[in-house]
Image (cartoon, rainbow, N blue to C red):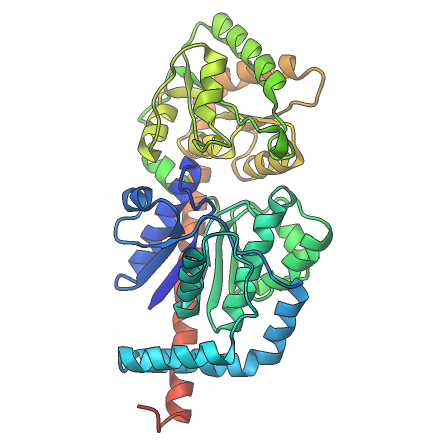
Length: 444
């Protein structure tokens, strides 16, 4: 059994994505203890820390399509019968010998050579990725919010990979997905590609479920879970609420302004309000950084706001340790809110872009009113933020049991979804192996 896992962040620099990845890896390993799990990354050191025992597949960016998406769909439709045969032969051969397995894989590559991706990374890295994709039994697209207009180029590359995987007889499983907002060509491409998946697990269903339905995705392909990072945060919860206010602000470079919409001017305004909150409540305000890439460095933004050195947070454990010191978390980052809510701590989301409004409303739908939302394009947002802090601070003890109950429910939903993935993949492997065994007695 061989699994190729596509993480949201190949750099593994986002601690929320790292938490999701660790959960996904651990759950897959539980069901397939002897499987080879390949994970796309450009940081072997970080991968070893997050998922010890995984095999790194070096890649820096996803492969862009070399032709319109409809070409891939047409190829898939024309080749579906032969593709099933190749998939069956792979399963049948794997039960017999590595040499025979390699022969079948080579035959599949000859029958289904991809027309040639346009590499935007060094050729060796692109070839490593394609070889891992061809060799895989399952492509797991792991928890992400990538399929959205703000990441359109990367989303198209991911959708192209899904099409290639399906053409080559590789099962496609999508876990912990947050999808949208999407429009135009990306919307049609998404609808066509996602129909090729065997299962799509949504981490939020307020907007994601209606979107998939509008794209014509069959209901039996969709299941609902919470974010895969919820379990780690729930396990790290304290025995009681902390006494600090956690702060995270997700700034965005001007070229990515549609991502968070929070520019330097708005960061300064948020800083002034946070300082006023600190003086009024006379409580410590501590940093909860999540992203630490050059493009989005939460720690640097928070240092500018708080006027001190902040805290050195580089691992999931350190981020969770910061969160559980809090009674309340104010955040412009989705996963800082996930960590807080899952540990029984109210969160207030700061959102300006449609992308982040969708994210926080999805959390509000899953966790209830304990996830408040302040729209930063509202002229009176400072007053509304202060009012939200007062309400959540006073209500935190009452809200904690409800938040923890919600976290437990979502963890259970996640475990059920992974069990369904295991049963789905294993049933198809048995079917294909039996089919290949009955139709290919002369091979070997």
